[in-house]
Image 1 (cartoon, rainbow, N blue to C red):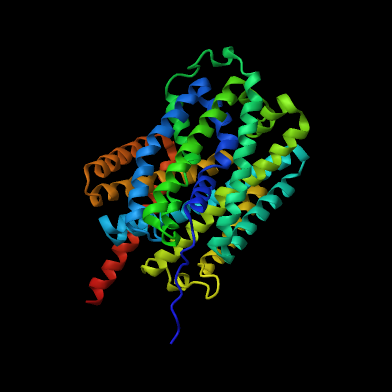
Image 2 (image 1 turned 120 degrees about the horizontal axis):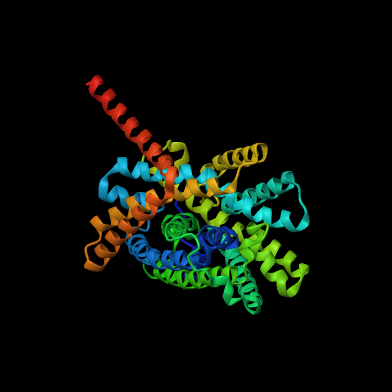
Amino acid sequence: MTKEVSLKKSISWMQGSAMTIGAVLGAGILVLPAIAAGMAGPASLISWLLMGLLSLPMIIVIGMMSSRFPDSGGLATYVREAFGNAASQITGLLMLTAMPFGMPVTALIGANYLGSVFGLSQGAVHGAATFLVLIAIALNYRGIELSGRTQVVVVASILFILTFAVLSAMPNINGLAFIPFLPHGWLPVGEAMSLIFFAFMGWEMIGNLAEEFKNPQKDLPISLAISVIVINLLYLAVAYVTVGTNVYQSESPLTAMIILVSYRWGDIAGMLVAVLGFIACYCPLHTFIAGFSRLVYAQARDGNLPAYFGRLHPRFQTPHRALLTFAPIYLLILFLSYAFSWDLKPLINLPSANFLAVYILGMSASSRILQGKLGKSLSIMSTFLSLTIFLFSGWFILYPIFISLIVLYQKHWQQGQVRENC
């Protein structure tokens, strides 16, 4: 009789904290403070502050739900418990269709950091991005324990160097840089919030990894609490020095962090930060690929995807088939980006719109499941806030709507077939 292989419970609170910080912190902190400041001016600081505050209820709810349902399906599991299988399938598909854009763009941001300093061609930049993607898949293939230890070391290094970059930029802050505070009015503040939501994506990945925590009821809340404090402090600090030094008005805002460090320490330090940017973008890539592969595994286990993906590696206990299936999809998007010189901003907005839709569904589900007043209140608040930010996504909201309609049409067609056969 063949022994059933299950996901290995090996994640501690420290590894969980590192993986959560790594999932959220990375590409966002490197480029979005400068892009948001270009949109809203100094008032972009309000966008960052509000997004940090508005994400808190959502993060608390995710902690409550992932402790209650330590299942690799994550938000899709919560939606199934509240609204049934069709809604869960929509949630899973929204996350999966964000994946082809979100992962390559994260790798490309890091690769562009290297390219800007070392004069790499676009071919070399895309090659470096491909390297990041393949390394993340390979480490996740070998097991979550190895990848968790790797993430602790990488995240600790990034936090140290980011703190160094902020402190280095402080002497160059000019109070006049904050005047006028609202150069374009209030509307760009909301639009910037919709864009920088990309920098707050990743909290939900802890739900997909919950099944592999040693003690999810204890360690999950600790991991989320540490992550929230660290990430919000760093985001606000980097946004503040980005505005205060006017670095966002440079020729290349995508490499604003390099310019910040170079102000005080010269080009050598700028090169160090470029390498940091490359490594920092590996962190969210690593955790998201881990989370998405578990989502595919859970969806296949629940019958929403082919059973082929519901098998684990007999030795490493990882969803290896899902991981290997991702590889050609990522490589195709990277090739198309190189061939057609795609702009990164739309590639950021597409997954952001999908994840906002996922949060609306997940938080609505949580409001039905959680019994206490606190949980219900925070879930309803998170649903409303996610919906509000979603409406600022412009034409990009059509992407998740289109994906949802495809699932609903498929379900309707299947029900029609069943009635005909009866």
